Amino acid sequence: MLNLILFGPPGAGKGTQSKLLAEKYNLVHLSTGDLLRSEISNGTALGMEAKSLIDAGKLVPDSVVVGMVQNKVENNLGAEGFIFDGFPRTTEQAIALDKILGEHNAPISLVLALDVDEDELTRRMLERGRKDDTEAVIRDRFKVYEKETYPLKKYYQRHDKFSEVYGLGTVDEVSERLQNAIETVNG
Ligand code: AMP
Image (cartoon, rainbow, N blue to C red; front, side, top):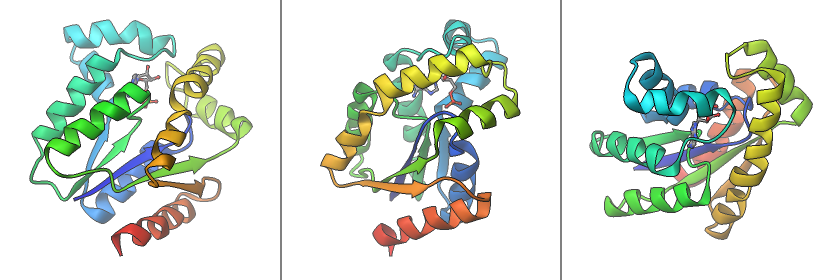
């Protein structure tokens, strides 16, 4: 299995790039943000619980997202691989993911980190105009990223699975850089 994590701050282009890579390598695209938004639009209890946290730029509890990821992985065990987008966001989630994948002998192949500076990120997020993308919420999402998610870089570097990719340029240019990084482990 080719199991990739697309890592990076909010607004770095993880969603767009994950979709392209999922198509190219025939992977299941697993975005916890998309899964949560679909729970909200379906009006489920989980969605209701998550909504106020998402609207405030805070993280949804680990147990909730880990449960969603576990279901999605276990329902797609025949897949050629997964691309995790927006997950893991905490060390606890990373440990849980290793455990889930470990049970199926399908470890993470590579973490691709999109490198984009903060001014550009803010500009992009304001432009896409999502409801949880007001300036105050964006600031909170950055803070959460720096405190909870950025430290995961060390976690994956320790396991020698971390590849940083320059995230500015056209969608196709960035995609090509990501594909080059993937070929080094998938060649
Ligand atoms: P995203 O679409 O990945 O930017 O996610 C949108 C929002 O959903 C985030 O700001 C969080 O509130 C929530 N969310 C998405 N993924 C996770 C996760 N792995 N852990 C906790 N909260 C998450």
